[in-house]
Length: 388
Image 1: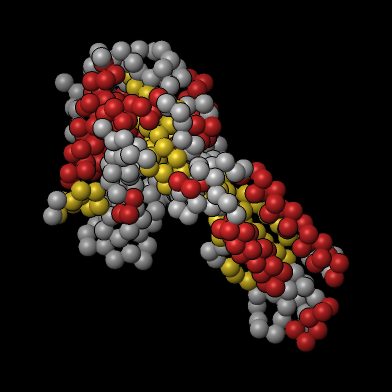
Image 2: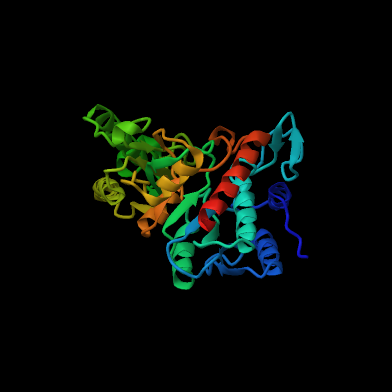
């Protein structure tokens, strides 16, 4: 009989692949594909044409009809560089009631449970289909999910609902902020600082854009908040610059300044509107720069776009998760996930997975044995529901 691995055995395999976003995830995808093939499970691999070392995978079990459920997780993890780990981050180790390893919480623990459920569902008499989606590049802007969603809808019957298994302590998270970010490069004109009026300092001009963000934050904090926005912490859209670099010497006007401008947008406000506002301010400052030196300019590249997850009225995904967990609380988060991208593509979506988001990206990342076992029971109950 073909081997059917336990959730822990699967998580141990998945964690062993160092799928840091900057590197390839193909060995993991190939292993999963081989495992599914051994069970005769329909699956598809989609290789990113712009990054042939990255791939997503999707699979289907049960009747080939619409109205099923997708279990979705990302395969990439954040680096361990500079972190002080007590054990090998790519070897799952159990200590004191916890499973340690990079990705155990975020989110190879869920990935393992989802793969286990898919294989078990293949051998069950499911009345509704179950699908699996493994994405990539979530950690660097949720850029891998949208093309994979498009491919899924080309080749599989469209599911009704999606559970994105980010660590939520198995609570139903029904809303999150949207996010968008822009790599901004300000090009100035270098002159000696004693003659700075004849040049353009890229740093000082870039500082105007950063200060524009400061003022928007003040305005957003002080304006009346909608009931939807009030669910979030903080209950307003935030504008943020986390890194700035540029310049060559203290007495030369900077020839270049680089930074990322990020927006985390509450549901009810528009990501395109915030992009338009930022680009308008960029154009205004660029015109002032070029009035001094025509060579000066500002380049803006959108590096990620993550739509918010809007709470649904009687959403199929939320209803299913609540019926399985008994959780009737109201939960929203301020970070982004791929759930908003599924919702934008026409799926009912909810975030629900085992583990605590506080462990994500940390040294000695862990998921408790109790949470992992609770996730296993969640999957058992889900399979029973799909077979009913």
